[in-house]
Image 1 (cartoon, rainbow, N blue to C red):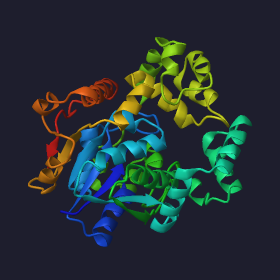
Image 2: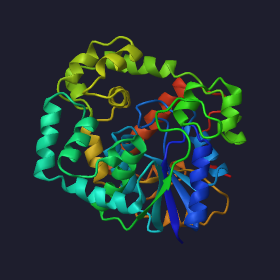
Image 3: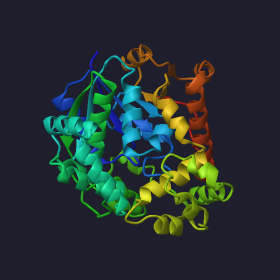
Image 4: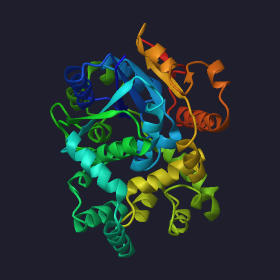
Length: 381
């Protein structure tokens, strides 16, 4: 069976996401679409404003056949680790032949060429990158400047979705995975854009304007609109700062994105939003600061990420269509399929450690985003 995979967050699922799934059906004609979706926390370093089971249900109603969870240790990491972790999971499923994603400008050919070049990173590139970082530039800006100085194609480093597309392609090459890529030109708002659009606004715009019912209904399917307005993340920010107040320099330095003495600046913070703004700047992005605070809250350390990338893990099923043949295909994966509690009880080693982190993340989300209808188990729709 030919499966096409999508790596996603769906925070929230919107018209642009449905468009991508429709284009996959039209262009690829797969036997099924499996979504590998972030759980209750995201790569921006934020709490998901709808729980993972609700978002998984939205994915099925929007055109997917099954949804499995991207472990929190990957979902809350940098773009490179996010992509490598996702490909680590997907490459364990023999039937996954294609990875589809939205991007602004990349074609499959240009992405493969750029991925090969950036994977090698010649001496001229590394030298210029070090120089730019020493001058105080942030990593993203330094990498783009180093690429241009080394006659590498830097056009794919200009937007977050192109950067992710490049990282997905690099991860596939690095893993030697037999997965081809299917880039689909994005429609509507960009990754960080908060502008109100008529039909294809970004997830950022929807979160920022979640109280505007008319705007929401114009940009998400009806089955998503029913779950609006999205709740506040105020409780999560308090939890993150509480965890920070109990941390010290040593424990913060163990967080993957925390380096170069950044822990000292973070430990002086008392208000979440003010700290994110003040600690970020030319050198560090706000997303990086948020990820450090999030991983500190969840107890994710640099060594956890390294071990997870090199260890057999699991496929945590969040939702699937009734009688979908994808269930048997997922059951044939190299990693065990986790559907019920008894499946989790069989995990051991690094898989057990990562599942414990996922479970803790779920508890934090439930506390910070309380709901009488908070689901507990995967759904068959």
